[in-house]
Amino acid sequence: MVLIGVVIVIIGFIIRLNPLLVVTLAGLVTGLVAHQSLYSIITQFGQAFTTNRYMAVFIVTLPIIGLLERNGLRDQAEHVVAKIKAATTGRILTIYFIIREVAAAFGLTSIGGHAQMVRPLVAPMAEGAAEAKYGEVPDKVRDKIRAHSAAADNIGVFFGEDVFVAIGAILLMQGFFEQNHIHSDPLKMALWAIPTAIAALIVHSIRLYLFDRSLDRSLGKKESKKIPKKKEA
Image 1: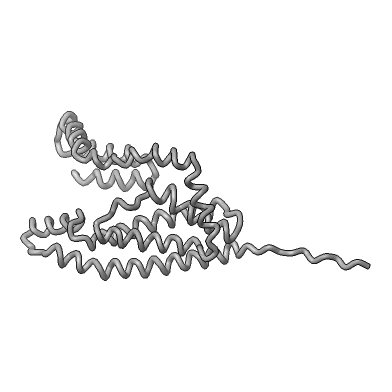
Image 2: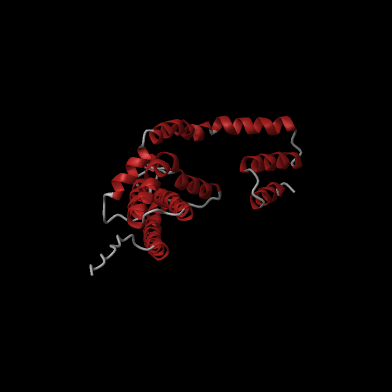
């Protein structure tokens, strides 16, 4: 019955309730089923928040990003990319994916991110490349471009960070193995992550190439059509 919290989370996400409300409710129900007092449950919530308060530091970046966007950061990013003829949405996102994954492999996981890179720079550059090639882009396609921009960041850092031996994921796995009396070497675990990172790079590059092809099929290339002059009688 203690696992009923997992069921609550699944049901809450399926019916699209507020994630914060769902997780809080699941924690309360799990604690009550485990015969804990309400005071103890709320105390654990507070301790978890204070212990992991550094996770909320990204909120500080939001006002800065808002000021940059208000002063034309997104517009400038779109204009710069529009001047590059060879730039396409897929190529820009592929380059960012490579930078993100390689940087994460060296432990520089904070070099990118949705708030500080994808929202103000990467997504506008990808949208600008699409507008330069196809003209006005429908909102549905624009949403897809933004989704692919976010995916490039997520996938790049996810598979790249495991190559760095001192990253939290490697240390977490090594600690889990030690608790279960399984000898593991963090360096070897990081080395075995390299083939996976390379495979992720190849697969996602192909995916972005196919995304470019789908944009060509759905929007077509923007061409200036000249109207032929009528011959005078």
